[in-house]
Image (cartoon, rainbow, N blue to C red; front, side, top):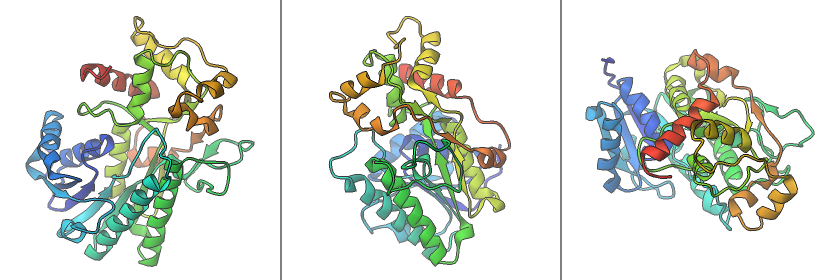
Length: 342
């Protein structure tokens, strides 16, 4: 059994797909976890889910917090040594008003980090995204991005989610610089997160796999994804919190990019009886199809542009290779089927 720690971690967004896996990693490592939820009515379900996944939940407690409200943040941080801020809105369908995503992402980061700084926590780990690194750049450049790169908000058109993650992470670093504590923040910048579901909530990235499995996509658009397994992302959050030299760093985290047709091929080999796309849709057809499918329309800017992340710092942090994309995708598919979601 892992030795219990006395230092409590405040984990925002514990009821989410990634938040649940981060909670599992923290609890298995022996850290008491105080998880934030928008409503305490969710607490019992989260506790049961983590217990079924093998966590000892004796060290688990809950607080009610909202990214857009001041109430409760300072009280939630009382007695906390570490902050894991995973909560942020993530959708495939972009809202008509960009601020529906940008405001809670930025204001939630301000509230979480502000309270953590006032409480004097030792280390803050922020869930950012490759969205804050690899977008808005000229497509003629080499599509490999490192921790030194930032998304260009003044560059190629980007969607509201990308802007929200970029503005939120930049605000986090600004706040830490202003406090003279840059070395006490680490950000995890994953690509599209796949892997096993802990409950029947598929999150967002898993919806891509579900659409390939349920036959609703007639052919695969030439839109790339840069995948990563949620178990690696959770492990990186834990390692960034406990590794002294991780402070002050960004950690891009993903394996090699794949197109939808590559994901479809992986799924078809495992599930040959399902109506999984066999053909890649020509770009012109994708643009026409996007007129009737907003999910595709909101991602047209990335058509044919497969971006790679330099994950070497994350691999060094984890001390092991990343889980292959095929493993992550199949784990997602198996979970979707197990939970009756497809």
